[in-house]
Amino acid sequence: MPNISKFITAVLLTAIWLPARGQAGSTTSLNMSNPKFVTPGIRPIKSEISFGYRLHTDGWSLFTDYGKIRSKNAKTQDMFWNAHVLQVEFSEKKHPREEKVSSQDASGNSTNYVYGKINNFYSLKAGWGLSKMLAGKPDPGSVSIHWVTIAGVSLGMLKPYYLNLNSDPDAIKYGEDTRSRFLSQSRIIGSAGFSKGLGEMKFIPGGHIKSMLHFDLSSNKSSVVAVEAGGAVEYYGENILMMVDQSANPYFVNFFLSFQFGKRW
Image (cartoon, rainbow, N blue to C red; front, top):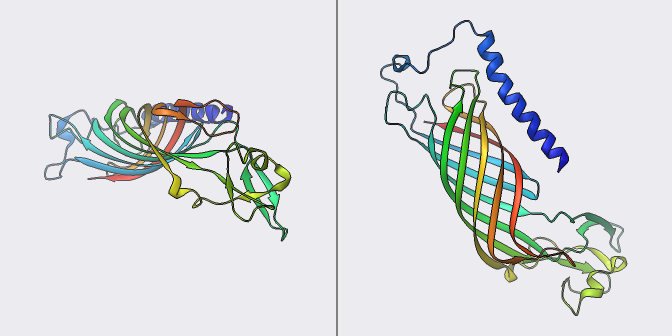
């Protein structure tokens, strides 16, 4: 977590420094706040779509954003990118105590597993929010900074974690009757794989909210190249148990760094 925090801080400082440097070195600054800058006959930008990867302090996500530019003035709506944002996200949560361990099977092949892990926890989220431009302008080569807030519903998916043991023909999951074998490292061969336990997946409804700073680094108005840094809170309808002898909670709080690419039209 300290390394992620340092990385986020570095990104924030870089993104703030770049616009200032670009403005200081520019000899032909464009007045984007002037509606006359818009070239007649060119359609203003109204929509954007992007895809990205999010690294959390407690896991990772894949997501897609669809934005609808909002402006009362059609001539300037592609200059100040305030937008309504629809976001769909798939995440996997990692418990802070998770640690991969290597073992060898009878053939001498090395396999990995997480010792003491009871359940995998995934979530599918759909959210709606607003993106407001705080600083910068969409001039070629500049950086714009936006504040984005999104809230919506979450569907948690709790899947049992199975292990293969050298003394059992079938993979086992954690339970009162299997506890001693499940935690006996000398008998563990490795994880049974993602597909094992899918039929036992439990669905848990919930909600989420996230707030972030969005740094648009694209060199032109028709593309999206961005970095985001922020935090999120998720809450589910019951306690989520992921590790042996660890507390179960219905909520998650995390910080994240995102990378995304897309286009505007």
